[in-house]
Image 1: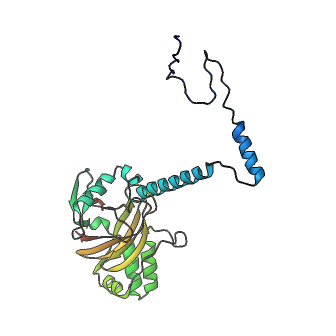
Image 2: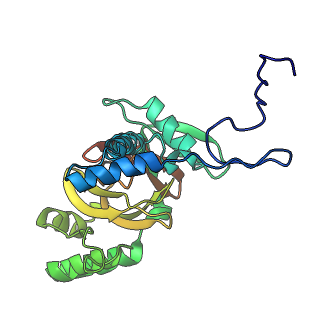
Length: 277
């Protein structure tokens, strides 16, 4: 090598001051930090704290980690990282959201052949009637036994007991509904509620024609409700009570198909017409 010229560094090898060894290199000892250690010892001996900066670095790293956690948590809270959107049914939930607004809330109906279409109402037919439970309820009411009638209505639901799940609120029969049932103006119809996407503990309240009916946990396996409805048109309101993450994803199943609602937040409501055909 010509005098006055230094060798060019090999980019394939680390250039730091630390200890490394290659096959054709001489092993270099690590840097001697005895001077810094001695300085620290003198500081401790004099009662002054050591001059390390690791404490400040730890605070900076801790703050960065906290900010990162907040950002990621917000991302999941807003649904950006939610498992809801990974489910195949999310396409129907998103479609219902696109065709809905506050004044015209729509459902996306998926029939048995797999054809989907927007609709403003949940459809029921004679195949959805729970005749056995309705007969028990009507017989109890004809005896003016409102307690037994309410017990029969609760037994007709596939809801867990409130002692098992304290979020559950079971339905009862009030005086007006009792009169309508005795007079044959109401029939008991089955509507299945289910979580169509990621099951994460969503809970909703169901109101029927302006009256509170039940508080229902939403699961993949479905929760079958038997609801006294007027012949003709009814209005069912579903209100979000608890969101497990990514929005309350609620759908309905009747003999007419599956009906997907838009995703909701806690406190938000979905209003829908229920048509008995």
